[in-house]
Structures are given as C-alpha cells and as structure tokens.
Figure: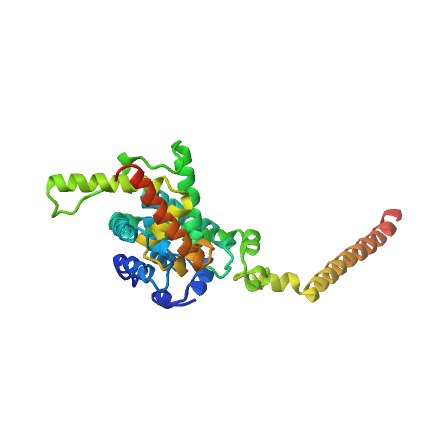
Length: 142
Length: 188
C-alpha cells in the first residue's frame, strides 16, 4: 500500500486549516493544540501488522473452506444453480458435467423413440399371447 | 480462469466476481484486505488475541456470504468493514461493555529510547487518549482509525463510510475538537 506518513497527511491538512485566506478565525483557534493532538493520535493509532503465523494460518484455513464450499456447490446442483449469479451458471444446461444428461433428457426425439419402442414391444407381446392361445385351444378341444 | 499468479494484477471488481467461485481469487482478496481489517479490529478491541479471532471470523463470514455480495460501486473493503463492525459490536455486547474497551486490554508500548519514567508518563498519556477515543461515538472512532491507521484520504474514508468528502472533513474536525475538550476536562 502506498501510504505516505500520517504525520505529513495530518500536518498538511492542518497547514491548510491554518491558512488565514481559506479558513474562518474560529477554525484556527487552538490550532497548535489540535496539531499536537493529531500527532498524539498518529503515534497512538500507528498501523499494526498481524503476526506472520496468523496470516498464514488464516489464509490456509480460508482456502480450505473455499475449496470445500466450491465442492459442495458442484455437488449440490440446485443450490449451485440458485446461488450462481451469472446467467451462464444459473442455466443448469451449462453446468459442467450436466450438458450430456441434459442433451438426453431434453432431446424429445429420443423420448418419442423410446415410447414408440415400448409400445411396439407391448403390441408384439399381446399378439404373441393371442396367437399362442389360438394354437392351444384346438389342441385342448381335440 | 486466469493463472493464479495473475490475480495480483486484476482489478477489484473482476477479482470479487471470480472469488464467488474460485478459492484462489478469494485468497487474493484476503491478502489485499487483511491488514486493514486487522488494524480496524485491533484498535476497536485493544488486544491481539481478540483481534485475530474477530479478523478470522470476518473473513470466514465474508467467504460464506460472497455469493450474495452485490457490487454497488463502493470498495469491497466497505463490505468487509461492515462485517467486522458487526462482529466487534457483538463482541463488546457479549462482554457487557458496549463501546468501551478496557484499559487493561490495551497493549501499549513506549519508544525503546524512552527512560522508564518517560515511558511511564508516555503510556499514561496514551491510555488517557485511548480512553477519550473510546468515549467518542462509534462513527468517530471508525473515522480516526481509518485516518490514522489506514492513512486514508477524506475522499477514501467517505467512500467507505458512505458519506461525502466534505462531511468527513467536517466530522473529523468535530471529532478533534470533542477529543480535545474531553482531554482538557480531565487535565490531560
């Protein structure tokens, strides 16, 4: 972070305050003591750095949680689709790994074909049953 | 998805968008914001242990909610500060000392060059100033931390606090006057 010295920042600001051309007299009343106060504040509120171990541990822990969260999103697809903000992610057909299944379910020709095949099998079964009964009946009566 | 090494070059808005689905992007956001959030919390609670605990909770909460984050044109840090602020408030509430950090908690150290009596006097003055800061409304405390610890300009503070630059300037001046009056009333 490209921070300049706070002492300079606050001093510069107060140097502006002290300019008689730019500020009313009441603002400059007690200015030296305000300036001293800002120096004390800069000294007291000096930036602190987090411990290196803490920084590394938290980074590690966050990355682990983020990866876990990512894995959960990929597994729990309805949640994934609801949480995903982008139009591409919100469309289940665009979720990686689902495009092939979506192609099968979404292809109506495949559904019609399966239904027709099922119907044909049923019809053949019924016809076979009827033909067999007719063949068995004369034998039974004889 | 960009190379993780290129995250450092990404602008914040793009990085936040990526961080919703990419752990490495969130890691970069963490690195960019850790120190400012830690500093803010440290100066609100006054000790390292609580500062670390609340900083960790701030980032974990941010990670858990990042999918609900909506970019409204303000810095991402403003969102993190809001989470941190709520956690600090809960922390003080749980300890039954809203807004007031115990002086015993404050970890102060004088300059190594100071003689013992000078150091003691210096610490006494620091404690008095710290105490005066803690008596200020929360918004003023936040302003002082952003200005002196983060070293942000009035404009940057305004963006983080949702106020105009001129209103921050005015709030800063009022805060200094109030601090001065408070300290003078206690023969500082």
